[in-house]
Image (cartoon, rainbow, N blue to C red; front, top):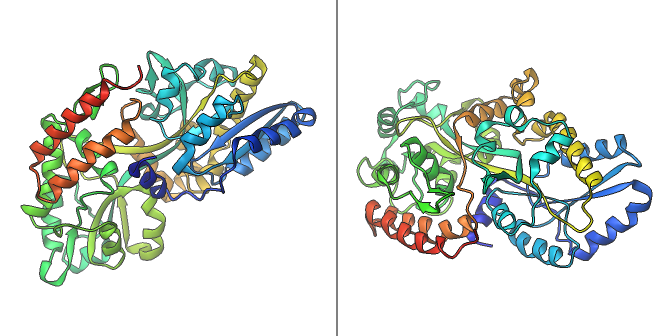
Length: 426
């Protein structure tokens, strides 16, 4: 598992249980089958807050008919665990993971088409899921995955620093010009005070795709496997990041890992663009002095990258129509109780919950829900996470370290990744 994926796991602040090997999963299922009806094995390396309670309620309601057996396992070696279990015909019926790891299984025909299962549960994905998390998730014209958690990219600012600098603490920047102006007012390099901190590495897997989309670009076309991040939109996005350091000098040079976070927490960095996983620690640190909003429109339109988790269903030998129906019923139950998931700190992906009065009473969740309207996903291409970590983000690092120009960095990464595309499944 690559460093980008490991970082993403840390970023969403998951608390995962210890690893359980495949035979232990199978043994647990076997013990329950006789007394609990049809067992549905559900594995997850994703965020689990609130999940156990919802599953317990489902099992109680469907006692004797269906029993969901839930297990978590570490994100950093989930591929090895799952593949080993599938090869031994002891794999999960349902798996929760981020989006792109689902693609190889779909191309290898190891996943069940999800829409018939959703229909069995009474779910209409076209109206009951956020469009940003449903459209664009087909493989060869078929939907295999359903969204269960979202993690948008947000803008955070220190209201106290804004006020001290003579800026309106309740008016965050909405455009690139306003952002640069505010950052310059907030910066005093001699005192180590920065308006913004542009790290070469993390959180660029959240920030760069956001800016790329704002300028009208895409990372790649999943249908043609054409790499697209080296277009003018991609150059504009990376040039903006580069300019925060070397032109406008609102960010320190060669910012180290976690420096944007550490300086923000210490009051030495005024503004942050990062995943919504930063909201809890920032809120705990700053309270009412924390500002949170959608990203400024650095480009031409609102857009933000969505971290995410999806569920898919494997074509196991034990899969039956009755089990498929049980999975559909469980998904409908899960979505129907997703307000409990929201209260546990996970953004739901169920439109009735997202539009509910109850969600609006949770400021963090409501702010995140607004970001879904302009959310973008990684292209659904096998191995995209590993490949982009190896080439795209490595070359972006070099550009932000002043070792390559933005144009040269993106051109080099695109050439290498385009060659890699020819070796992938599908």
